[in-house]
Length: 168
View 1: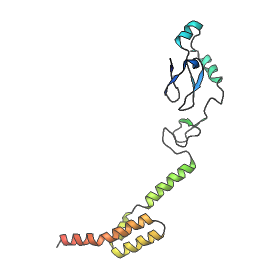
View 2: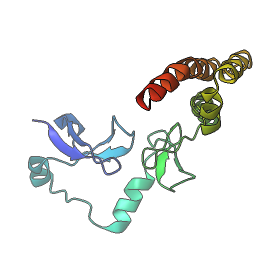
View 3: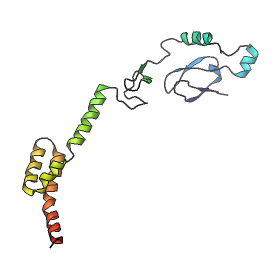
């Protein structure tokens, strides 16, 4: 019958085989060392008692080799302890890798560059000027923004005609 264990780092409920009773194992999620408790039958027959003394627990923790402990570091934004290989903090969502952060900034910059500003829309109100500025934007390396400006400049005469016919 498997032994139920809870990881003290990530809180995941684990099941360990009886063969690991009284031994240490790694959590499959976070890699933390989890001590599998002895079964009640073994404690009764062996006369062993669970470790409740702080000194015994500290000695037990010190006995864990550095290979068994996954490397950890502090998140520079929120200060929580995270895995050293983490690319993004699981607590605050901050991107830790500079290469991933630069890709995210580039995506954001492209999205902002493709949006029309109020001045772009004002330019598009005048049909010929909006078309010329849109074509210049496409040539300058902002094709999505340029196409939006040209499209809006082409729609504006029809919009002005509809407004004029309403007021006649």
